[in-house]
Amino acid sequence: MVPAQIHEGARPQENIYFRGETIESVYVLCFGWAFRFIQLSDGRRQILSFLLAGDVFSGSMVYEEKSHFSVQALTDVRFARIDRADLRRVANSNYGMVESLGKLCAVEQKDAEERITDLGRRSADERIARLILNLTDRLDEREVVRERRYPFPLRQQHIADITGLTPVHVGRVMGAFRKAGLIDLTGGFLTVINQTKLERIGGLK
Amino acid sequence: MVPAQIHEGARPQENIYFRGETIESVYVLCFGWAFRFIQLSDGRRQILSFLLAGDVFSGSMVYEEKSHFSVQALTDVRFARIDRADLRRVANSNYGMVESLGKLCAVEQKDAEERITDLGRRSADERIARLILNLTDRLDEREVVRERRYPFPLRQQHIADITGLTPVHVGRVMGAFRKAGLIDLTGGFLTVINQTKLERIGGLK
DNA sequence: CGCAGATTTGACAGCCATCAAGGTACGTGG
DNA sequence: CCACGTACCTTGATGGCTGTCAAATCTGCG
Picture 1 (cartoon, rainbow over the protein chains, first blue to last red):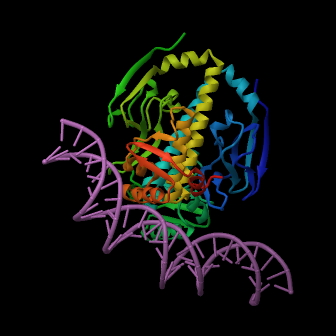
Picture 2 (cartoon, each protein chain N blue to C red; picture 1 turned 90 degrees about the horizontal axis):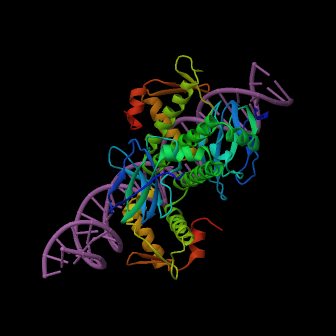
Picture 3 (cartoon, chains in turn yellow, brown, green, red; picture 1 turned 45 degrees about the horizontal axis):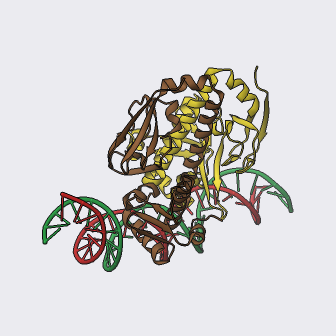
């Protein structure tokens, strides 16, 4: 049995669902960019992760009814909804499915805890360099890249909200990276010019 | 069938295992305090969570061979090791077990992502207030508390390493909390004197 | 008592935030 | 075609939260 899928879309800035809502489906992004975030009552916003085509919004949604994060579309997006009860029925009779869901949770936890380390212990330069490298790696896996030019729909506000900085400071750091010949960012496309140096700044290699 | 359990112990400061090691067991803390952490090559350390009696070190260990974090004992500890292969055999023939593991992963991810929000978007005062409240809540659940005096084996260095601050600044904030009559901390025991105010500082309620 | 480790306190510095003023790009409508 | 508005980015000046360094004090313990 295959679980029923419902396909939907959303426009940029549109919220797909909110923290605290009861969600009856597991969502998978099929096209575009989105992000998961937590918003505080005074307006401060922390982005938890960016979602690319193929990403499950969160493995925890298979086992939790209430979402602990909100989701917003960054570009035009399309996504699939799979009924949670259906999915779990399939998983129960399918060892490989349980295995995959478990691995998914493990990877998500690792990502989250490396982000904790970034936010707690790394400088603005390190965080931004690592974000860029992380995104380009994920885009490389999707093989949509031509000549190292990556589609890059993020505003400085988004980068600020995932790195725990302000948009102004993000602009300064990105400007410094550009002037140092590390990256180029024009027309919604990012080019990594000096990956080695960016990795050194990010504390990799 | 019940999976084999091996019981062991460790002394304060002793590392139980390291990031990158291949771990063949799922660990459960039976007694004492420990913490999970990631250490950078230059010595910076980020604590991911404190472990109390009854805590599984991490749900992701059921599905990942290599640990992405290290674990160190904070006090004298005792813990159980359950062979991963055994555990998974049991889980495969036991729907409730899969369910429990899934819920465990979901809770861990929620905790991790709320910590991300703390680190990215909250001030030192907020982070420390929330840490104290989080720990006292968890200790309350364990019903080991007498007259609101909580065992508190953390050094300022540990608080610094989970809040992304320095020990000196942690000392200043804790000193301010003490002088403001919010908490008392003597002889390894913590007393929350004014919980309401602490919650207000932490952005709760 | 004496030592080692932890905490407290003070002076100072730096990273990043805040506030504010342009500048640029792009779409809209006259 | 150009004025205009909006959103975003850039740049400068200033400030504050937190870090760094260092010394003094406290605490536990052999």
